[in-house]
Length: 483
Image 1 (cartoon, rainbow, N blue to C red):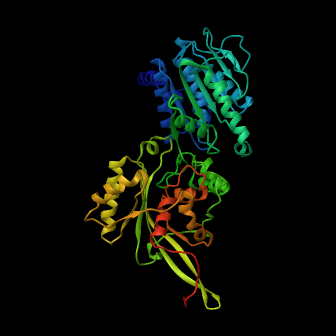
Image 2: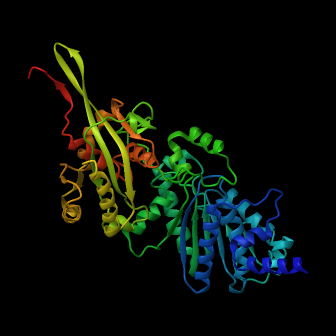
Image 3: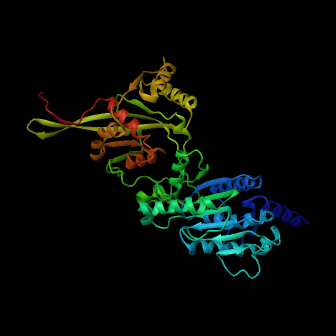
């Protein structure tokens, strides 16, 4: 009796929850492993289905590293669940991706799930129409809706989409590097996919990002450009969290992650951390151990004067975009030594040392509170705070100056020129291998932004590093000690 009651409860839950549905119909020999991202994706899709049932549309960009189960959830289980839960609405479903064979295999798996005994217990009578032999165009028995599986660029004319899933829109790095290919994918998405939407619809774009201007990036850019473009919510799951924890330890060991990072090298930022960077920056040489040295002890850092430099992000444009800027405060110093080059002349050599970082994605009140707390701590050591004081940040500087009165010294930063000119004095420091940073969760963002500069999406760590360097008024070049 207890088993029957439990079974009834599980079946009832499977009708209203995608995650419970997956667990109920799972029939593979290996166990279904649930991670934090699995739960979050399923909950987001549940919200999308609820919105659809209310007559509203929902749009999601879902970014997950490879081998973490994104296609299983979005392209196999969700379509089967949607066809059953919303059967009374005779829904049309479109499955798409980089190639026909990929999406056809998804479609066959959806058919297999519908025909399974467990599925029929949850959604009885929902199965592929009798006599339906096609795997790329088929119907549910008794439904006027159709399931269409077609690669991007394939013919879906005449097909509608109550639910549309675009999964893995790029299959190789060579395609990702091709601007022509990326543009073709975008045009297919604009003209062939989004035009097929029903008045109320669900659109899921599910893929590991390959490039800053791939389909994920173009959707984000279009949302920023045009307020009438559908508002895609973003779920981004990097393989490594800021605290160093891994996304899916339930399935993959620490050694697996380390091997993947080592194998991918510079491409790990996109493929594992779902944060692609511009490959062609090349302004700063950022090889760890050669150009940038990461220290495990503060004892390695020089004594003497330090400053805290802030790059502020507070405008609505900066905070509201899909991948918002950060407010970043770097605590650093610059040391100088001299190398004899003969003839009584010496070359001045500078080193940049960054031993602490604080950062946040916050509106001005929370941002100012963070700066105040940090300044109070720094003020005990007499560390001044350098804050940008020009353009949009002139008022922010005045506010912070008043806020920090009596706590610490506040100095204006007015580096001349655009962002490229401001950062240019740091180039020889990186080239010489004289950049030192304390090990921390912020290291990756620091290195990625310098590596991508000036073409990357962010320079939140570049600006304060340039301010630290300028605060010591160092200049490179040959110094005549007799001058």
